[in-house]
Image (cartoon, rainbow over all chains, first blue to last red; front, side, top):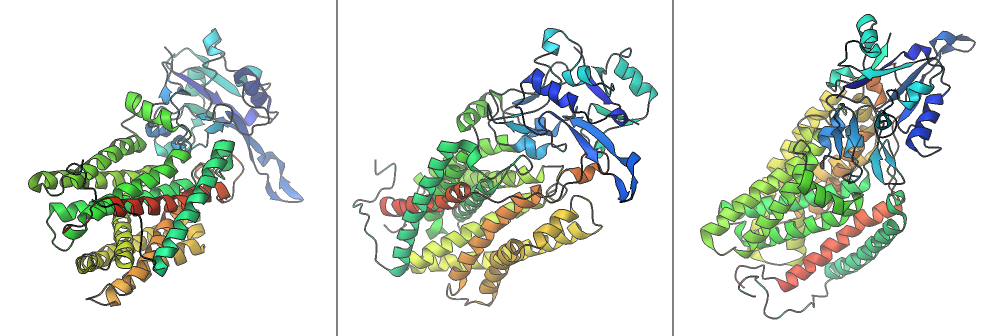
Length: 187
Length: 383
């Protein structure tokens, strides 16, 4: 058993969206669907033309934060949203009643309705695809050309992610809500 | 059969051809047809027939369902309290209030079951793997218990202490249900405007008001009975206290909502306060008109309170529309400050014709169920 998390060296992101493509391919996400599972946010360039601060344009790759205390899991009436043995927040489609409560409760806007199954889906850290096959990387991490993503076991002190989180400053999104995300943004 | 269920000896469905009755009959038929249209659209296109989006996943159907639940729980709470506490002026109304509550809950379910994507899965897995941390799970527990004890109270109405005991349970579970319905919104901790204790209390108080409004309308327009009038006058007095409390709660909530311009909260408050559906409908129709009619109206007659009850119900419906809206209109990004996605403006949502058909059409279902109940069941003590 592991406790999977991901560190994002977001300043390296070039917004090529290869991660989105790889995720769609690996996990069978609907083509053309926007912000399903993962996405890249764009911080607007500061300043006014012609005095634009081009360096201020930053990209923020994001996805489900796989919170240790996930609001979506707490509100799910049927335990369709659950933690698997690796601490990954997952959805049992058979139990999902499409009440959309998790979509309202998620502070990160990370949940969406899969139009094919009519259930609420989300990023699974490739648990039922790559990890199930024995791989130790996610599709988005594996494909990223600038190595933005570091995925691994947070409980393993020798893992790359543990090493990075020990040695570099990082922050989590909306940490004041007490969700304890397992996505970490590296400064 | 008649010993178990208080059925009338001679059942016929004729009614007095007054203007109000005709209006009610035509409205019920038209609204039921509209409801059928909504259901057909839903069955044809599924959830795609609704205007809800990823950013605004709840819409008019949740609001309509909460409206029916409000008047249901209000009716049951007042009726069962009247029986349990032996309030003489309310006791003649008890059976009607219990049946009104029971039937409006069924009307609410006729909306809710279409809003939920997989209602059969809901029944199965709420029972098999229910999550006690979820407010929605507890609704699934409390509603059936409320329905059960409401029905048992109605059936054992004349059985003295056992009826009072059942009424107490119906009262407890009705209040638990409406409190939990409010918690669905109050527990969303990522919505600063919703998170907290306001909606739980507001749902209970406005639910009681809804019960009073529905009963006042039906009793004063359809029945001309001295006993019912005395009951309405008692409820009218009670409504003054409830409306006053609600007005104070609104004042405090929106002052604190504006104070300090808290990100994520102030946007929602500013948006909702700049719409007529808040000031005109929720506050004006729902609170101001009823309290004026109750305070300044006749002390010995129903007076304008029955007309004000119409406005009150419209206000109650808009209060439910607004709670859904205000919980969702502020995008989640502002709390993430600068490090997430491009800032998004207030989220837009407009119900589709299908949603309006189902939500409003259920009023027709409710009226027809009430009519059948009036004609089939013995609802008067002196029958």
